[in-house]
Image (cartoon, rainbow, N blue to C red; front, side):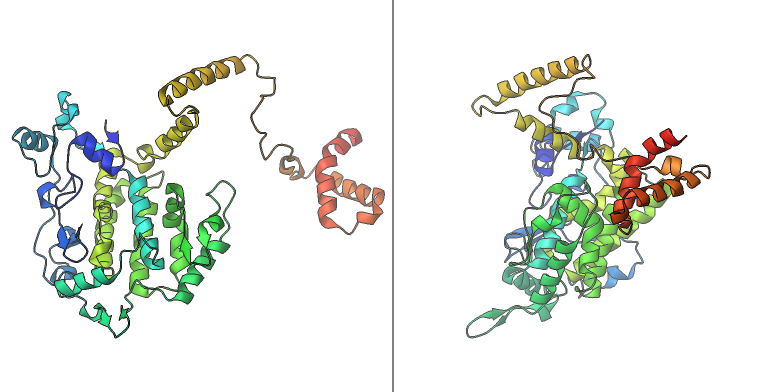
Amino acid sequence: MWTINDFPAYGNLSGCVVKRYKACPICGDDTPSHRLKNGHKICYIGHRKWLPINHPYRRQRAAFNGKPEYGIPPEPLTGEEVLHMVENGDRVCWKKKSIFFDLEYWKYLPVKHALDVMHIEKNVCDSIIGTLLEIPGKNKDGIAARLDLLNMRVKTYLQPEYGERRTRLPPGPWNLSRAEKREVCNSFYGMKVPEGYSSNIKNLVSLQDSRLLGLKSHDCHILMQQLLPVAIRSVLEKPARYAITRLCFFFNAICAKTVDVSKLDKLEEDVVVTLCLLEKYFPPSFFDIMVHLVVHLVREVRLCGPVYFRWMYPFERYMKVLKGYVHNRTRPESCIAERYIAEETVEFCTQHLSDVSTVGVPSSQKMGVSKPLSGCTNTEEVLPYIEQHMIHIKTAYPKFRKRTKWLQDKHNSTFIQWLRFKV
C-alpha cells in the first residue's frame, strides 16, 4: 500500500520538505545539493556517489564540480527512522508528522509514498526541450548559469564574453543553431503516428519561433519514449545527444508493461551513468529536484512493480471528468455529486435497454467501415470464387475495369452477398 501524488502534494501528505537543500525525501540529510550564487537556486548534482568505487568518473574533476568523488550513496530512509526524526522535533527535513503513522504497519512499509513517474517524466522533458530550443521560462541556460560555472571553476571556456554592445555566450554542447532548431521543429512537424497514439504533434509546433508549445503530460511521454531521440539524432553534438538518448531509453524501459527483475540492477547502473553524462555536458542549473529523483525510480520499480500500476494518468483523466461535471462554479461539490448520481442512474437503465441507440453519444469513427475479408478469402476453396467475382465486376462495370482501388472496394462490399447467391 502506498500513496501517489505529484511532488508538491507528496510533501504535504508525507510531511517532508520538498525544496531547498534537503528536498529529496529518500536521501534525506544526504541529499547531494549545491547552491548557485548567480542563479539563486539549489541544484542537485553529485550523482557520482552512486557509481562503483573504481569508476573513472569518480576521479575526473574538470568535467564535473572540480573535485574528485569519494562518497558513497546514501541509504534510503526507513519509516522507523522518519518517525524517530519527526517525534524528536527534526524540522530540517520534516515539517510535520504524517497522519498515516497512526496506522500500526505504516512505519514498516519500504515505500510509503510513491514517486509519480508521469510528472517526473514531464518535468524532465520540459527541461530538455526548453534548454535545446531556448524556450523562455523553461531554458536552463543563460548568463547566470554561465557565471555559476565560472564560480565553480569548471568549463571556464563557456564563460560569458562581454563586448561593447552585447554579451556573447559561447555555444555549449547543448546549444543548437537557428537552422538546427528549425530542423528539429520540422522533424516534429512532419511526424505522423497511428490514430489514438498521441495528440497531433503538428499542433504543438511553432515553426516561426522554433518552439514546442502547450505540451501535456502524455505529449511529453511520447516525446521521451519515441520521438525525441529521432528528432535530435542529426543536429546535436554526439556527447549530449548520447546522454539524452540514454535517458529516453531508460524511461522507455521502466514504463514497459513487463519488467525483467534480473535486469533491474543493470538498469540502475545505467541510469546513474546517464545522470553523470548529463552532469558532464549540461549546466548545473539543469539539475533540479526532478532530475535527481530519476536515480530512485528503479528502486521503486523493484519494490512496487511496473510503473503503469501506480502513475497518475488514470487519476488525472478522472479528475478531468469530474471537472466537466461542474457547471455552477459557486457550488462545485454539489454539481459533481448530482451529476455523478444522474450518470450512475443512466448507466443502470442502459443495461435494460441494450438494443436502443443511445442519445447524445457520438457514433464511433469506425462505424460503417467494412470488416476485412481475410477470414474467408485466405482459404483455397474460396480463391476460385474470388476470381470469378472480379471477372463479374469487370464485366458489369467496364468503365472501371482499370481502376484497381474501385474494383477492390466493390469486391469487398459485394462479395459476401454474391457468394451466398452463387453457392
